[in-house]
Length: 525
Image (cartoon, rainbow, N blue to C red; front, side, top):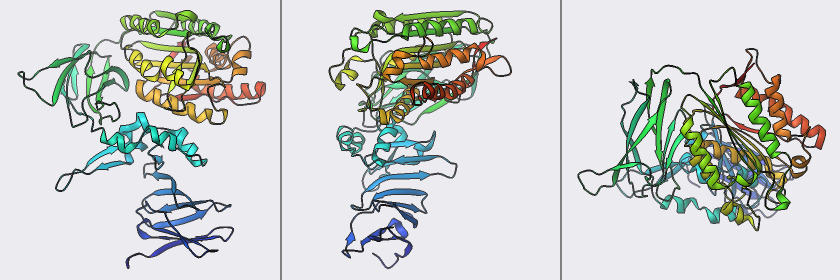
């Protein structure tokens, strides 16, 4: 302890076993009052420790510092369990020593990793937002707070190893120019990716937040060679369709391993095309009759039919045409799903509205935190079968990216079988999965996952989540303008579903929603 170190806070545990002193510079010392020895650890902060509080059982210590961090410590070992940063603009981020984090909408930009490049070289910086796909795990943050070890997850994904995989490419949009007006609906996006040591992986293109291009290693994008010279930079073209109004086109790219995403760059184009009456495209995918008899359900197909009908009827006055697409039971396989998305992509326009309804079995993987939908031929042999056979987050991203409609809603009404999940942590696992799905697709999503009993018994000949949706569409969720928006529908389901499941089954099924700030009408009466 140096001469410039001074105490700034003090506490004694309720049982009198420990005396804790906080100092400037983030230092904390803990003395055992029984042995008189100093407990090692309690390092990692930088600001003056202004407050200290011990848990009633003396197992944990909470410290608050002038650098706007709150840290949770294990008293016996001095190990840091969790750190939280709260910004002046009310954003926040919480992270574990293993690198897993949870955050508010924009909170992940506040922390990251400095990568030293040697003497006289500026350090590189990677924010945790750039490793979102691997380390955004609210479910693991909760496990850490509950005292569970995250070593098995850290063994699979080591942040130090990820950083060593190399920086993502540097991205630049070459044309069109920023903040221009376009007379044409279709424009060519030309962009450059420059290897910064980690190789060039998937490029991701979004229009107004909706992912409309996710190419792997440049495939499906035209490469431009610079006079035949070998270069660390590559240039690509992509034809984009705009909708009337402002179109914010953003671009990011991953390193070769797909571990680290670059910061996004963007341009905004104003297209002054005529506002056309939009069409509605409804795609319903549902499985009742799984090949594995233990997985068979009762209401998936009936629910899908009812949703397609309700949206079609409600949309008659609002949309020019209503296009219906369905895949049921034995049709629900990866190739058939990809094919029907191709069909939707040929018919849909940027100004149209697209709704995807999915029913059947859905699983949130406790290993990678992603959502998986089980196709009709899925057979459970082990947890590894889920990631190998089921329809993944990446699959949904690639296929939803085919659909140009920028006003989109995804409804996931799936049964998370008790064979695949831990009931105690299901809610936070669903939050993790839906957030990751929406981040990759940009599509507004409402998700509810039923227990086995609820899925089989249902409510009034429907699954409980779909019944709540249908009741809302009948008129119960409409606002005063006789239009039903996705926010109004989500609000109604959020209020109705927990009450219904608690009164009938004794537990609250809470839907998860991430609407990405979007709100648009689905029906008009």
